[in-house]
Structures are given as C-alpha cells and as structure tokens.
Image 1: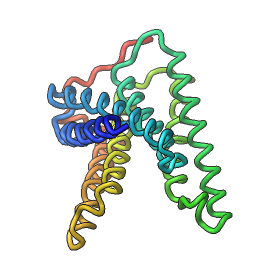
Image 2 (image 1 turned 45 degrees about the vertical axis):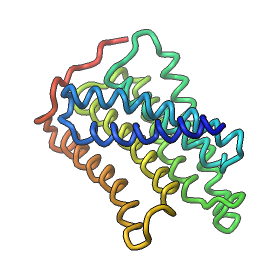
Image 3 (image 1 turned 135 degrees about the horizontal axis):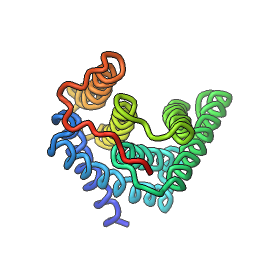
Image 4 (image 1 turned 30 degrees about the vertical axis):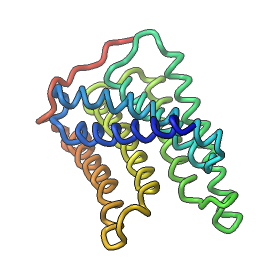
Amino acid sequence: MRMTLVLHILAGSLGLLTGYVALYAAKGAPLHRRSGMVFVYAMLTMCVFGTLISIVRGVAPAINIPAGVVTAYLAITALTTVRPIPGTRWLDVGLMLVALTVGLTDLTFGFQALANGGTRNGMPAFPFFMFGVIATLAGVGDLRVLRSGALVGASRLARHLWRMCFALFIAALSASVQFAKMIPQPVRMPALVLPMLAVLVTMLYWLWRVRVRRSLRGIVAVAAPKAA
C-alpha cells in the first residue's frame, strides 16, 4: 500500500505540473497537446490509486471516492470532446450515467448533511454539494450532446476547457488539503488559494473568449471532431 501511495503522489504531482503547463500554453500548439495528454494519463493514475487507498484504508471514502471518480470522468470526457473515439457511444452513455449517479448521490448526501446540522458522518456539506453540482451539470451536458450530436466550434472548445480546468482544480484542491500543514502559517493561505484561484480565473477568461466574444485568436488548429 505504501507503493500505491507513492504512485498516487507522483501521478498527482505530474498532473499538477502538466496541467498548469497546458493551461497557459498556446491552445492547440504542440506543447499544449502533449502536456494535456500527460495530464489526462496522470490524472487517471492518480484517481485510480487514490480511490484504491480510500477504499482499503477507509480514508474519508464518502468524499474521496466521488472526488476520484469525478476527476477521472472530467479528464476522460474533456479528452474525448476534442479527440472522439469512433463507435464508442456506449462509453459516452456509461460515462454520463456515472456522472449523474455520483452527482445525484452527492447532492443527496449534501442535503442530509444540512439536515443533520451541517455534517454527514463527520464530513461537512460543502464537498458533497461541490462534487454533486459539478457531476450533475456535466452529466446533463453529456445527455445534451448524446441527443444533439458532437459539438463543434466554440461549444466544443468550451466543453473541453471547463472539464479540463475543473479536473485540475480538484487536483489542486486535493493537494492543498494534503500539504496545508507543511506550509508555514504566514504564507499558508495565499500558497494554497492562489493555485486554485489561477485555474478558475483562467478558465473564466477562456470561456468568456470562446463563448461570449466568439474569439478563437491564439488557438491553433481548431478542427471539428470526426463523426462517430
């Protein structure tokens, strides 16, 4: 299990590094694509080992298992948005069902926590609502895509962008929780908050660029996905 923890930490560290590189590299350029692919693989590795640790050791499974599942789901669907796999509608349906199941379950746990004075089995309501809202909205988005067909243009970029960014945000949030006690008190708050805030601010900027302004300037090789 110690090796599992080491692999979880190494994959998470690599995911954070490549995630921030992809976030600020020229969109669509080779550096962006390569770092983005490494980010996806690192996130999947981190999530698998992190979920396994949570199950075996019983480390806050009500929070850590949904966190691992949602993070892996976001990374996979962000990738398949720009690199669709022909003939895998069953995979899209399965991922949608996973997202909706996790989302609705976490929302239920969140309301149970509120009804119980703010906690459920010692866990606060906020993480349940956070993962519940993210997963449910993503699952509803999957349903819309399954009904209307693959997205193109700004809609496709926006879907890819927010899913990748939230996967990175969750990884940064997890790291901040784990390393909080290792950072000196005077700089602890900015050191923990700024990396997560950077992800959200950058994500909102690019969503504004592609959805509101409809500006693809600075984005390389914006090609529509092939039909499945």
